[in-house]
Length: 185
Image 1: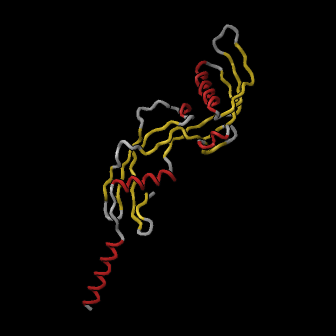
Image 2: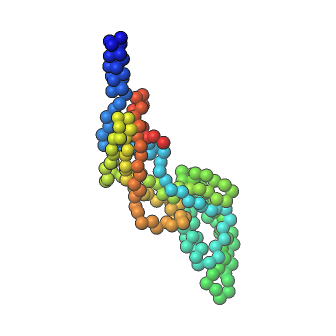
Image 3: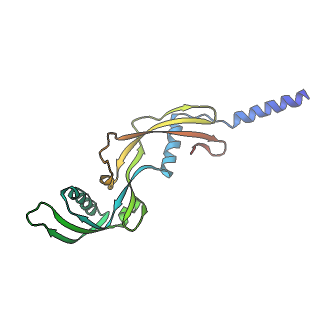
């Protein structure tokens, strides 16, 4: 009886040790990089297209953003009508804006006259190393610095001028005996 309990205890200890793995900074960085390729971090904004009217000087700044997108090939932008107001700084312009195929990599969802687009994409930086702490044998907590990269649609955000050029994000890793270390959602 004592032998059976002793054998069971030794066997369970061996299996428990075999199901855990060590992890270091480099491996944690590779796990996060792999995860970000399949699940990128980004910030979205709303983008209006179709028939657009520009009437005031405030709206002319937005008009310049649309023209920039047209010059880069992300939209087609056609003037439908222009009315010059007599003795006024403000004129009225009506344009037709259509998304091109080139914009498809940034469009997440599209309706008749609005689209949800990626405004900022966050990528893993090389400058700041991965900071991680192993919580126990099967889990780890990893903090990384993600570099902010603006997309062509960044100018359409409510607050396009932010105070930070990076994002600090913490991920939880879990060890799976068949797949190894992976990000836990």
